[in-house]
Length: 401
Image (cartoon, rainbow, N blue to C red; front, side):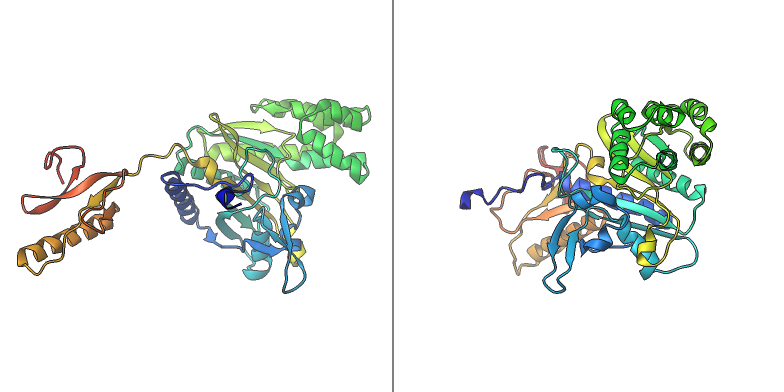
């Protein structure tokens, strides 16, 4: 029906002034930080072949991805719900280099099924990835970059939560569960349900360790508790724990004022992470602002397996209450052949141009009877033969230019 055309699909959101401009300012600041750290900007396509989008992503990413048949090729296309695989393709195929490659991006994603009914289905994400090194130095740099990005968006006192996928992966591999039960165990650990975990694992040190994972969260002392649980088991889990401890020290060295917490059952993401993982929170916001981690080897699907680590940040979540837009209203002057009027008009045009060069927003009237918009709280007014900026609600000339 015609009167319903203004409605949008469930979960879609449109940003209006002044919030939309604030969002764009945040995006620019984040990209400026990426640029300052030497990351190269890429623009992956919003729509891509489905098999390229789902590389290493598992079932969660598949369920999040909108799909359509390409009328040209007959192949399935997807609207991206994540950009990590696209960045991996760039590293493996489009920008092949032997050394370390740093890439960054920013753009909209589309979620077919967001995790929460209140989440946007069209989040705006920015991210940074490092390819070509398995060093913890790279993971520490990515975490430090994440912290600086939050600072650029005026997020104060973030909490960084560190974990390591290798701990869970080592323990679950020892169980040798069939695929369906392994998926159920992953979901149980991800949701921190000790009861469900106990139902899926047998009694014994290995099962007890998996049941304990959701409880191993908190300040750095929790790593000592984790050692008591994992060291007797041997294998890869204690090694991953030591990597986590070493990463935490590096992050502390780079960001000494950031509050670090640990969560050994942190399994967030789309299934491609296989090393240290991390996320950032802020007390006033009930969801992660940024997430990331190590995902070595997913570029193999594109013909080149390389170590990689990175993160992305939800730009919409970084937008605080938007500040009122402060614009300047410039009056309409009728064209005239009289020298005095020509001089006034030339001076007005020059004043408008100079203010815009200085970064001010100037709205120029298009007709004599046009009313200034509400967000123009200042105006250009001719005072003592010059055009000056004054408060629209103050007597003429009481404010300086």
